[in-house]
Image 1 (cartoon, rainbow, N blue to C red):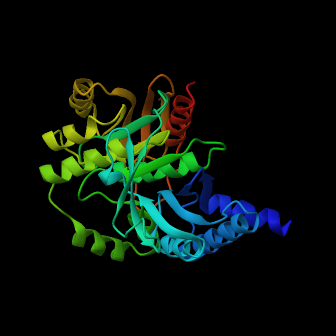
Image 2 (cartoon, rainbow, N blue to C red):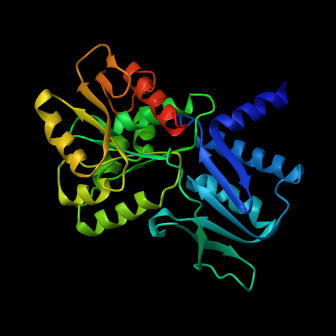
Length: 317
């Protein structure tokens, strides 16, 4: 039984799977603390080494979300087996290509900093890229993090990937930090706020374009602007969060101009006590209550409804 619980824990906190010479990795339960995650990563890698799944060789490529803590464990374990390690960088990929950067090398054919291009297999029609949009203060970041957790809780969910699409947006680290130390989270946020420049928009659009997972979700800044237009045009679907009825039409029009299918229109009711789910297909409609930074909102009915819709779409249902 101990082995069963260990494997279950590994699958919950961090996922590792070898596909050819590419190690696919990603976070599971992001509520877990860093010490728990790195222990699970080390245990999973040891298991793969013991069974011969990770046999070593010249080069291994890593693709997926990696924290600083996890990167240290991966480098330690894999660096003893492989002559060179390259990590996927979505910010420098191009259409049809995944680009990897060599980060460790003891092999004469690879130098640290070299880039390796991997031709991407054709993206299935069911792959979806969803932008969370709406004016400021609708709770997009909190909603995004809740949706991320909701997807992780659904069995056999296709791989998903979440990022922030604005320079002052909050990554997953913010919600996790806010739960433990709200004052520290606020202080850190003020330190990294940046302007929304055309250069940032181009880089973020390239990053969105390069991500190739079945479910990809990102949020944007709360304005209808040329910068957001550049980023959003890489999406396939839109989820609109609003505070009142008057905010719906501008964002629906913006999505229509970009050819995005609106899959949800949701009212953000901060002072509400319950969610209201008016419809679940083909468009999720209703309201979500109290999107409070630092709170786990993954069980909110409207977020659950959207998560199930995403899974269905990604599976072509």
